[in-house]
Amino acid sequence: MATSNDGPSDPHGVMAFIRSRPNLVGLLVFLAVFLATVLASQSPAAAVLAGLLGYGAGYLLTPATAKTYASGIPVHGATRQDMTERLDEFQRTVRQHRSHLPPRGDHELSVLGNNLREMIARWEDVAHAPEQRMVLESVVYQYLPNTLEVFLRIPDSAKPAAAPEWTGQLQVLSTEVARSRDAVLKHDLEAMRHNGRVLEQRFEDGDLKMFRENGL
Image: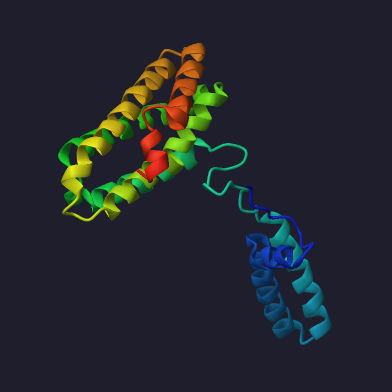
């Protein structure tokens, strides 16, 4: 479900408006202009008028936060910068918890990260294959962060037993992402679409089914 930054139409809308970035910036500009004007002119009426004009300028010139799905994926699609920032955040988490990861799993995450970065570098090409783009967004925004979080929640004593299954699932994902990367590098639009459908199928009822059903 997309979040909304529309104006106030109900109690929830009112709170969303009050907390919205344009409104907060507008209020700061209002306060700054009001104080400056009242000190300079000694006229409260002039200060209020100037503050209101400042509020309007601050509100209109401040971009609203992009609408997103619950997953955090932008409704209108992630940009190259969005994807880069999310992947950077994920890889920082991997580095922080590397000592808790099996070596093979850590290796697969590294391979996945490299392949994803190559694809993000050519995001304009990926955007021409909607299936591919949506799957890659899900990989970066949902699948990788979620599966890492779940594995880290497993008690350290149980991690060795869970490691082979977790690593195997990462290998499946790594193989498909690598194929998609090759298609992107070759500008093969049909191959990108096909690989996007393959990845999506794996999420739904293929090798990654266990991850969805058991939180891995």
